[in-house]
Length: 102
Image 1 (spheres, rainbow, N blue to C red):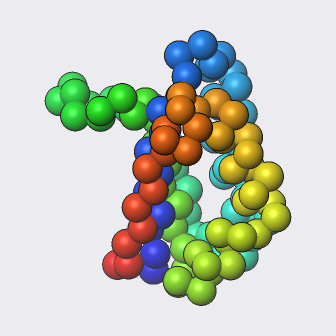
Image 2: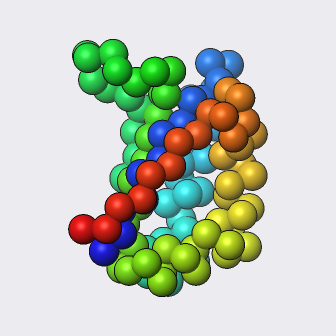
Protein backbone atom coordinates (compact mmCIF):
# COMPACT_ATOMS: atom_id res chain seq x y z
CA UNK A 1 0.00 0.00 0.00
CA UNK A 2 1.31 3.46 -0.92
CA UNK A 3 0.36 6.55 1.09
CA UNK A 4 0.55 9.79 -0.89
CA UNK A 5 0.66 12.80 1.44
CA UNK A 6 0.37 16.29 -0.04
CA UNK A 7 0.60 19.62 1.79
CA UNK A 8 -0.58 22.81 0.08
CA UNK A 9 -0.19 26.54 0.64
CA UNK A 10 -3.53 27.91 -0.56
CA UNK A 11 -3.67 31.63 -1.39
CA UNK A 12 -5.47 33.63 1.28
CA UNK A 13 -7.86 35.23 -1.24
CA UNK A 14 -9.19 31.94 -2.64
CA UNK A 15 -12.84 31.53 -1.61
CA UNK A 16 -13.58 28.57 0.66
CA UNK A 17 -16.08 27.25 -1.89
CA UNK A 18 -13.32 27.08 -4.53
CA UNK A 19 -11.01 25.27 -2.12
CA UNK A 20 -13.75 22.74 -1.40
CA UNK A 21 -14.46 22.22 -5.12
CA UNK A 22 -10.77 21.65 -5.76
CA UNK A 23 -10.44 19.01 -3.03
CA UNK A 24 -13.67 17.36 -4.19
CA UNK A 25 -12.19 17.18 -7.71
CA UNK A 26 -9.14 15.44 -6.30
CA UNK A 27 -11.37 12.97 -4.45
CA UNK A 28 -13.40 12.29 -7.59
CA UNK A 29 -10.27 10.78 -9.12
CA UNK A 30 -11.10 7.63 -7.10
CA UNK A 31 -13.88 7.00 -9.61
CA UNK A 32 -11.68 7.76 -12.62
CA UNK A 33 -8.34 6.10 -11.89
CA UNK A 34 -8.06 2.46 -10.76
CA UNK A 35 -6.07 1.60 -7.65
CA UNK A 36 -6.98 4.56 -5.41
CA UNK A 37 -8.31 3.02 -2.22
CA UNK A 38 -8.68 6.02 0.06
CA UNK A 39 -8.76 9.82 0.19
CA UNK A 40 -9.05 12.37 3.00
CA UNK A 41 -8.42 16.12 3.07
CA UNK A 42 -8.69 19.12 5.33
CA UNK A 43 -7.25 22.43 6.50
CA UNK A 44 -4.39 22.61 8.97
CA UNK A 45 -5.83 22.15 12.46
CA UNK A 46 -3.00 21.64 14.96
CA UNK A 47 -2.34 24.20 17.70
CA UNK A 48 1.41 23.41 17.49
CA UNK A 49 2.01 25.81 14.60
CA UNK A 50 4.54 23.64 12.77
CA UNK A 51 2.80 23.97 9.39
CA UNK A 52 5.38 26.41 7.91
CA UNK A 53 2.72 28.17 5.86
CA UNK A 54 1.01 25.03 4.56
CA UNK A 55 -2.71 25.57 4.98
CA UNK A 56 -4.31 22.35 3.69
CA UNK A 57 -3.40 18.76 3.10
CA UNK A 58 -4.66 15.52 1.69
CA UNK A 59 -3.84 11.86 1.91
CA UNK A 60 -4.48 9.43 -0.91
CA UNK A 61 -3.91 5.71 -0.59
CA UNK A 62 -3.02 3.46 -3.50
CA UNK A 63 -3.30 -0.30 -3.69
CA UNK A 64 0.38 -0.53 -4.72
CA UNK A 65 3.24 1.39 -6.32
CA UNK A 66 2.06 0.44 -9.82
CA UNK A 67 -1.32 2.11 -9.13
CA UNK A 68 0.42 5.28 -7.90
CA UNK A 69 2.74 5.25 -10.89
CA UNK A 70 -0.24 4.98 -13.27
CA UNK A 71 -2.03 7.84 -11.45
CA UNK A 72 0.81 10.36 -11.72
CA UNK A 73 0.78 10.85 -15.54
CA UNK A 74 -2.95 10.07 -15.94
CA UNK A 75 -4.75 12.80 -17.96
CA UNK A 76 -7.48 13.14 -15.29
CA UNK A 77 -4.82 13.71 -12.62
CA UNK A 78 -3.04 16.26 -14.83
CA UNK A 79 -6.31 18.19 -15.26
CA UNK A 80 -6.95 18.29 -11.51
CA UNK A 81 -3.31 19.16 -10.84
CA UNK A 82 -3.74 22.29 -12.99
CA UNK A 83 -6.78 23.22 -10.89
CA UNK A 84 -4.76 22.74 -7.69
CA UNK A 85 -1.78 24.77 -8.90
CA UNK A 86 -4.12 27.68 -9.73
CA UNK A 87 -5.09 28.13 -6.06
CA UNK A 88 -1.59 27.80 -4.59
CA UNK A 89 0.55 30.54 -3.17
CA UNK A 90 3.81 30.16 -5.07
CA UNK A 91 2.73 27.60 -7.67
CA UNK A 92 4.79 24.43 -7.35
CA UNK A 93 6.65 26.00 -4.41
CA UNK A 94 3.33 25.86 -2.54
CA UNK A 95 3.16 22.07 -2.58
CA UNK A 96 5.01 19.33 -0.74
CA UNK A 97 4.39 15.71 -1.67
CA UNK A 98 5.69 12.70 0.23
CA UNK A 99 4.92 9.06 -0.55
CA UNK A 100 5.66 6.06 1.61
CA UNK A 101 4.92 2.37 1.51
CA UNK A 102 3.24 0.66 4.44
